[in-house]
Length: 267
Image 1 (cartoon, rainbow, N blue to C red):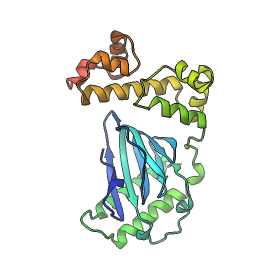
Image 2 (cartoon, rainbow, N blue to C red):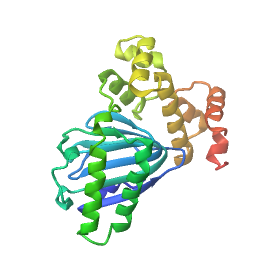
Image 3 (cartoon, rainbow, N blue to C red):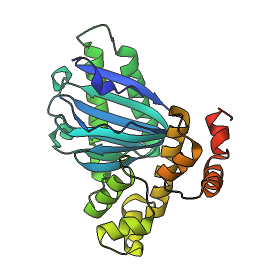
Image 4 (spheres, one colour):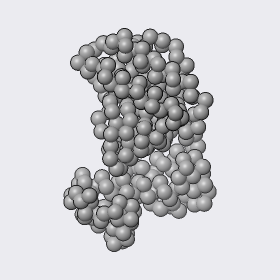
């Protein structure tokens, strides 16, 4: 997935997001961008780190990341929407309320507002001239309107994960330098009970710790099956399974395919 924030010094860039299934982003350090960035999802979900905190971005969420905040994406899951970045110099109204935020903000866009926000993003796509180092007055006006519309909804921002325990847990689960463990092992490392960990993570993300472990296992195993020649038994071990047959049953339960079938490209 091409990151629009990697544009070569352009004052504005926007890309359409369109992914199928789980796509595990390569484990690269969070990057600090010199532009303000945003991500708006119409469908699916994205797990991102912004300012050293994880954000689970779902359908109808708009994530705004001010310039200078470290930002990276851990995985995409059936994600459809838009990613963009802009320099404040292109705005007609550089004092918009959203821009006064000095930390990442996750805003929930009500269903009745999503069509309008999507239409503004599509207008930005049409107005964008990737061969030019400047932007049109029309594009600046549309970008202002988009940010103003989202800024009016920041009072409903309830999606940010501020629980330090949850942050540490998600960092461990998606740390690809280490083998994936079970909930009890993560709880032991954090010095708490498995039940307490499950309750805390469920309260912060809407998913239990066990569900996040399963998501990480599936994302990693899919990535290794398609992007490496690693034997299935080794992929099972990397994903936290001692028994290859149990891993195969787990994988088929969650994907409808055996690991070998997925690797060969079966649908």
